[in-house]
Length: 169
Image (tube, rainbow, N blue to C red; front, side, top):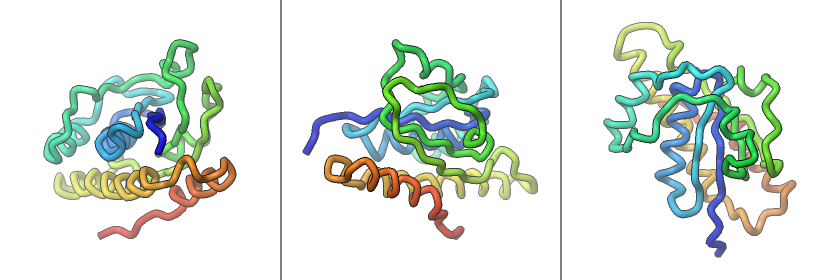
């Protein structure tokens, strides 16, 4: 068993909901094995209030949560990323910075809960649903045998996690 901590960056366009939620989940589930970060290509500048409310309800410390530009992680003094995951389709199609260290990448797109329409309950459900989908994917990711998979097999597993969108409900 390796004592190595893997750095993971979750990317989205606005860095106000999905990537923040993923960062929180991985820092809880992967504690001691993973250190998560999040950023956006065009950060909103604030974290969506429903994101903060959801995380607080689930007993997450939200003091880490801030909307920031992905450029913070593309400079030489930034933490070296081992993995970079896009969690929204816009960020997956954008030209990303060149990440120092050539991390493994995958697209784990989920619907944008901030774009949900309807009643307050329906909007909150959209955030809950995104949390559930990301939690499922991150749970699978944290259980992968990182040290025993070769790079090609690991990349295949990362891609599979993004394609297997768990069913709602």
